[in-house]
Image 1 (cartoon, rainbow, N blue to C red):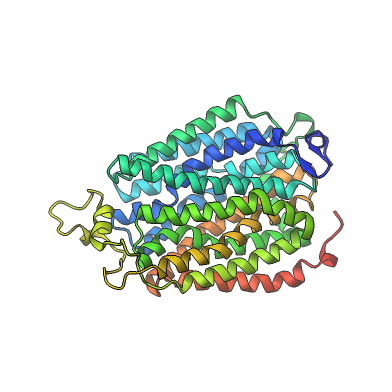
Image 2 (image 1 turned 180 degrees about the vertical axis):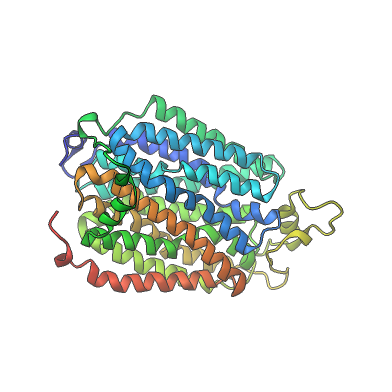
Length: 453
């Protein structure tokens, strides 16, 4: 156990006084992100984007993260967590400003590129928490990052839709609100967060290869570590399309607008907070990370499969005309009548309304959110227990890069099959991937397959 982690924990219990600053900072930071996530597909659709283009937009931010996250993660091992976190937060702030100024589809892409290139917020925060926990409490500590994400999904969409109500459904307003929260997170990091990776524990970067492909492949060749990195990539391919295309799916299948999607995201957020803020600590101590990973994969597969069968029954209050008008947002081309002419996503008719569609998808969200909630912190916790302390930041950076690569690939694949096959296709495809990975985990995560750490 490294010297900097021992004072921060007492036995099997986390010292929440040490964890609280980074938890609050990452929550504020994530509020900006979660304000935007439910709206981005609708934002793009309002500029005439189809499902394939929306998939590429969803891929832009994580694709840029693939470049930046492992480098920034490794640099945090050398220069400390705080300066790297600040750099990533400034990039996020600038990205939201550009998003708020967007007047065309290509500017939306530019905003996500700026944010993604400097996006190492989550991986750096995970490294801070790893510095402040021991092996017994690390899964719970990393789960708190997910709990912050869950709280963000409860609060962020509410803030977004309040700002939309005030701004008469102007999608620019939530972007500027998100920029405000991002700026607040910069101030909190600068003046409140204490450095957790001290000078005597830092590594020197003797060559560029230490932050490049050689280090990546060296890490990937380690038996258990390699399996876990592959697992985090594949499970995010399955789950990433679910997250990034959910608003588009509910728009097409149920006709849910921004307000309707807020209900879904708030519900998912409550489930994630419950799992990652409370249950995951108990489950990891009782069953261990290997059991949690298998359980998470099974639940994700079940949830995505259920989602794919959501019936095309919009809720009783649905109005096709009202949803189309909201999506036009006053940005339809001059002389365009009706405003739905620029909309490339099919939305339901006013016939056959009822409660079954909404009830079904809320039910499907339960196993999907629980499975997604336990997977990342469990995999990352097992990763940190099987590398040396000086490799934690770099390994988590590689994990974040693979997550970003998966998040970049998932919406591209999902958007293409959504457009060519149908709205359900990304979900049964994701269910199949999660199910196959579950079967492989039965052998790959056996205790006798784990090398001594």
